[in-house]
Image 1 (tube, rainbow, N blue to C red):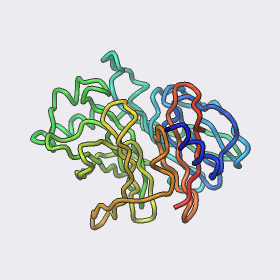
Image 2 (image 1 turned 135 degrees about the vertical axis):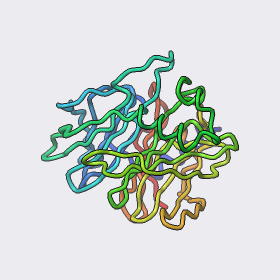
Image 3 (image 1 turned 180 degrees about the horizontal axis):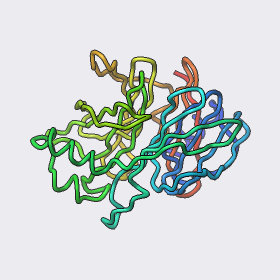
Length: 282
């Protein structure tokens, strides 16, 4: 039944180039180009310059692993964050602990600056969230076992927002951390908690003053995906509806392409009957 529903959905929407991006995990629109990251593709990104052209590009100036979120900051700059998590075997790798500022000029992506934030993140959470989370599990747990794992990234008015897939709080709320001075010397400056029905954050996107939130399970399962929007000032959370979203198999990133058009990236290890890049209209 899922296959039939998926076929009907995909017949009604537009796709990108027929190319497979393994484990697509993050995306952002920079000027008119969609930039895509795959979480198991080290030091390379994909560029979609139109809906029929997709190119993989090697990025000079940085080395990373497990890239999870991208966020636009200007017409030619964007941030990327890795998960800052341990590996699934519980090992620590510097390549997984990177916040990177990129430029995109004439189809060339360059890493301008990078910072390792895992230690600062753990320190902040130990100081400000000690009563809310299991600090030991946050530091020593794997991505599927309650350890620190960033999957969402958005930028609004010079502030970056990190959306955590895990941990969630002891009473089931998702965590968003705010980062200021991101382009010069990033500082974890605050946090807030959201009731996402015991789920974590899979993707963040910005819409002027609003955060657009894609939630999902705190481990690596394919269920319980939901959409929300929240004004960052009032922090009022509300459900968000996009036609066809519920038929997607494994949405992992959301990009606002225009006023009523959204691009969703799906995290597949092998090719599926649905595309990695799917466009839906609200």
